[in-house]
Image (cartoon, rainbow, N blue to C red; front, side, top):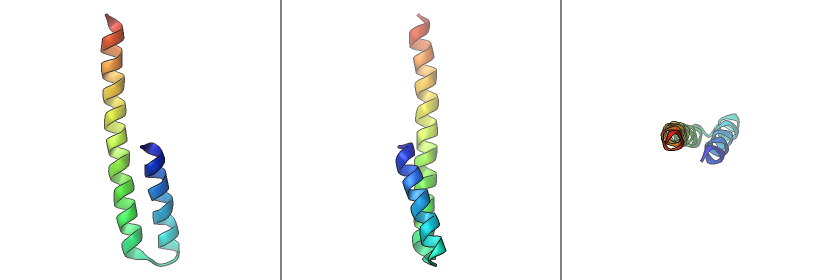
Length: 55
């Protein structure tokens, strides 16, 4: 998921360089959403992993 966020971020940068503002904005928002979903899932995996292996 982090890879997809990075890909959309790169698409947003390239689109912004070539002047496609709408595409750049859309790709950047998708990248932001994917990044935050990744962070939430990562924190949950660490929290539940620590609680499972604590037993």
